[in-house]
Image (cartoon, rainbow, N blue to C red; front, side, top):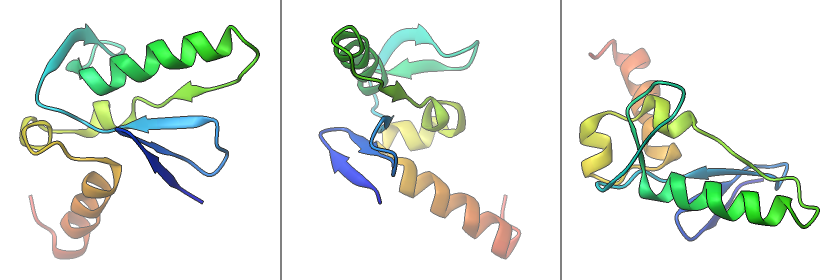
Length: 94
């Protein structure tokens, strides 16, 4: 099951947030990748705060690692990027 919640998608285990992209850089980096979105940075802060109180929340960087510059401008989320990848594979698009 997947739940959407204010700038992030919560994955089936309800402990993993997958933040949307946005067109405003947070100024950091994810394991040497492109600058992270504000949404990613905000969810990282939220997760750390909740984890200090006994929660076990992970913020996924999958969208950050797979989003293009155009995805970021269009504020793509995980579904947009996955569908784009499926279409590329199915129709051999570049």
